[in-house]
Each structure stands twice: as structure tokens, then as C-alpha cells.
Length: 251
Image (cartoon, rainbow, N blue to C red):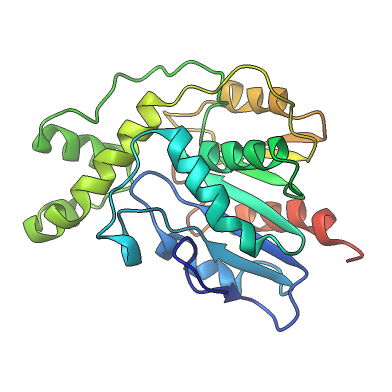
């Protein structure tokens, strides 16, 4: 597999039966999912989605609006949807994965076998947080550290900050300006929604509202931890493997 929208495939075995496309949180990238190649089922191919403005696409302009991002993303992924696949998204990545699945369904394309969302309130649930994307640099970075996704030692490295700050701000603006379109068909695939019991951004009640986006099976799982509860969590990985098993059983 190759192309600007995907990182090199991270395959756990020689004969994958399912391709898992992974969408990272705001400011996140393929490194977040790299350990999964040894941790997810041997017949699942783990593929990280690379958005414009970061990693190999650092010279491109990052998207700040969902609709054009999804239009470009779906076109970029289509050549790689040549077999059974599933979507996983964490935080902002959850709504990107959801909107991509929705766009594919509207186009009559084969949709994902499953959608797994994590650490994100349902698309139609109101955002309780004030916007942060337009804060000054120091206040914005302090908020990133508070959320737990940006180590304090990284923030102290000014050269590093200049590198990642533009796409990090763009991701937060993308999240803050996102409004799901009303209408359109619901998804039919199973939707599995995960969150941490101490996540300040996604309470179990808010995450449970993902059940409204599909006519198929839905399950909510709550794990110990905060917004990044899934890091180094064997309990989470076991649950993820359980979600993916029905998607490629018998294939």
C-alpha cells in the first residue's frame, strides 16, 4: 500500500483479512498507532491515516473545515478499500472516521465492517468546552498540556513547537467548527464507542449517544482512565480485538 493519505502498512501477519484504518486525535499521527502492529490480531492490517499538514505531508495546508477534508479523504482512501475494512478513531479522529463512513455510504461505496470511536462525544451532542484554537500561543499550549496529549517537555522545545503548532491549531479549529449535517441515511455497520471514566471531554453519557448514528449493533465500553485511557491498556486492546473479530470472521 502507498499513497499520501496512509502511512506504510503496519501488518501483524502475512495474510490480513481486515484492514483497520486509524484516525488520530487532534495533533496526533501515525506514531500513536505504531505499537498496534504487534498488539492487534495477526490477520488485521493496521493503517494510520495521514492528514495534510503533518508527517510526510508537512508542506501541505492542514484542513480547518470538515466538509472539504472528507471530500479529499474519501477520494484518497478509495483505492485502498479493496477488501473488508474497519475504521477506528480517537477523539477528533472519531468524527473524521464517522464522516468518512457516512460519505462512503452516501456515494454507494462499500462501507466499513465496523466503526470504533473513542474519547469523543457523539456528533450531535453539544460541545461543553469553550473554543481554544484562537488563544495566544502560551495559553493554547498550556491547554494542550492540561488535556494530556502534549508532554510538557515538548512544549519547552521552541523549535519543536514551531513545527507542530500550525497543524495542532488547525485540528482544534476543525473540531470547533464541525457541525454534522442533518438527514442522510444512518450507518448500518456496528458502532463500538469507548471512553475513559475520568475523561473530561467525553463522559459515558455523551459517548453513549453514538448509538443514534447506526441502525446496526451498538456497544458502549467505559475503561479506567482519562482522555488517553487507551495508551498502554491491554484491557482496551482486548476490547478492540473483540470488536474486530466479527468483522472478519469467516473471511
